[in-house]
Amino acid sequence: MFRSVLAIASRAAGLAFASMLGLANSAAAQPASDTLGSIRARGTLLCGVAGQVAGFSLPDSKGEMRGLDADTCRTVAAAIFGDAKKVQFVNTTAQNRFTALQSGEVDMLVRNTTWTLGREAALGLEFASVNFYDGQGFMVKKSAGVTSAKQLGGASICVQPGTTTELNMADYFRAQSMQVTPVVIETVEEVQKAFISGRCDAYTTDASSLASFRMSQGPNADQYLLLPEIISKEPLGAVVRKGDWKFFDIVRWAHFATLTAEELGITSKNIDSFTDSNNPDVQRFMGKSGDLGKMLGLQPDWAVEVVKQVGNFAEIWERNITPMGVQRGINNLWTKGGLQYAPPMR
Image (cartoon, rainbow, N blue to C red; front, side, top):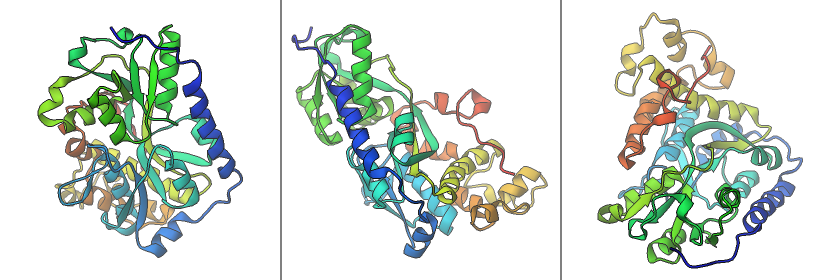
């Protein structure tokens, strides 16, 4: 079905680990910084995003950054400043995203980035939250007549270098005793152009990103098929520098606030009606009792501002991900059979 090619060997694995080890050297023994103090002194949160992925981070027609990752950044700004607009979005690539965070070019990273042991243990970074539980998939043109990844023997596959995607692909086809050729291209735009032009037979990345790409093709979207195999676990979320635990707590609990609000039935539209609630959990959430804000170094109503300005998790999902045709599935609340679970806010 596809042209004959050489075996993939160990190239993908070598590239991924070489990139990781190189970054680890620069991250070693870095002192903890006061990220929160720097953000307040600057008056804005610097948030690293992809800036090119529909549904996650992509400017709209007015130049406003939209998407799940962009809104994750906004929840943190709302918690810190009481103003979700105090975010400066910094576009990063798969290759420079970690160095941008390590060097302080950005305060946090929310860029379709997978939480792995190696990244957390070797790079001086910490994953604060998971805003999307994903998995790696494959896309082909329907005209190829392929309906399964197990039919991709001999195929050329477009992939970004220095990513878990590249390593996962190598591992998967090695386990299947299949030979494929990686077409390694640095930027998302060039990968997608190569796939569209026929330079590669298939395109692999997180299934959510593939759905985003297909949606972006408008009338031509039906030409592309997302294959059924999901070959990895890809918990995507917000990353901060290790050791700055005050900021880590804020990023983590800003996400948990959106989940807790959804559990409690609190939305951006009805939140004011909960002001006089007698429910102890609601009172703590609204900042009417307890010292949750003080514990985080924030105002008592920090969680109120997160939800009022950005929304609960269901609102954020429906605004950004639902239009791509992606069901919540495992990203549902735990009460609905999903993996999204917020510890008690008390």
